[in-house]
Image (cartoon, rainbow, N blue to C red):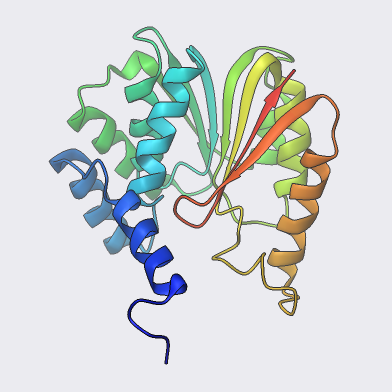
Length: 216
């Protein structure tokens, strides 16, 4: 058992404090409740707040999200984006999209600012404009993530930002003994982005990891 004042315990307490820095409001709390009913696990409180800050810092106007969930991440992105920003969000489950529509409506987001698409993200992304987007969020734990990354880099212009949620694969990536397929995939994605000379990258410990890459 670790001592209560151990570095590990102190680090966890610091992480938890940071996660709760901003707190949440009724819109996101209601969306999370719908997520529980649907078996959807949205981004953490800290990740939601970070998405708002990253969207604001990038002055995002054209955004794409893979993995709509129940709208927590989408609402968070649009809160930081410009007032004219449009979010294209892709999810294979119509129930998820319906829950997200409710979250956007609760937050006062006009329907014209969201384009919600039911379908296979690998197919939909290929139809989106090259160098036409400011920010792409990938929040879909599937084997197709490397394909999504390649398409996202094609879609982003210079200065555009790619964000990958759960980039630490529920904190398994830092543990060398873990060899699960999803963990190996995220390690490979991290290496691919880190070694790409077109990008500057960082790994944030928020939630279960946000991998952020900006196109030079």
